[in-house]
Amino acid sequence: MANHEITAIEVKGTGFNERWNISMLEYEMLVDGKRTKVDFQDLMVNVAENQALAIEQEVQPEATRIQKRTNRLKIVGDAMAELSAFKFNTKDNSNPSASGKITQPTQDILNELTNSTWGRGYAGNSVTLYKSEVDSGNQYLKSESDKLNNDQQLAMSRLESLVQGRDQNFNMASTLMQHVSEARGSTIKSMG
Image 1 (tube, rainbow, N blue to C red):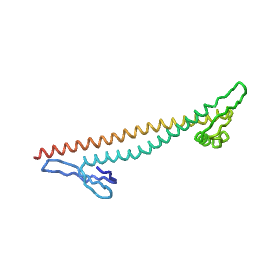
Image 2: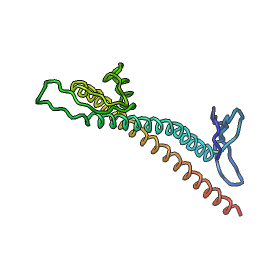
Image 3: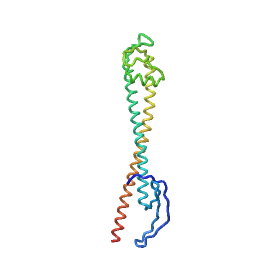
Image 4: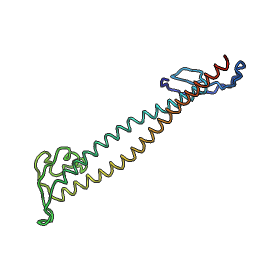
């Protein structure tokens, strides 16, 4: 069944088919701007299908946001690993220094998180950093990682809920179509 925009549903009254001895409600829908008569089963199938499709439109953007968050978590994790590579000898000095290399993605994420040029901006070069600078950078990264992980858990729960709702609506539409087909088949057999 194609996806159509249903803008109104009206109950027009009851009808009675004497030949088949069936009483039924007559429905009219405004579908894509046109009035269409429809029976209840078709209406319910269409409603379930449209609900599933509406939910599907929410699933993709949510999945995209989750992927972006996952990519950012990787950048943050890589940056934390880079800063962990700096080894300090704390016995000699209260704020010792160590040399190491900072990559551009690490420099960029730290610049963004600190709203300034972190570690004097020597990405790609060997740089000497003080322990306090590395500790500060790690703190910013840890906070960002915690925030992203919390957001990711909430987003995954929401995505799971959306997928379940979509699947339930598709299953309901499928089941309704099967029942409608069986009922119509039975009616035709009993008429013959």
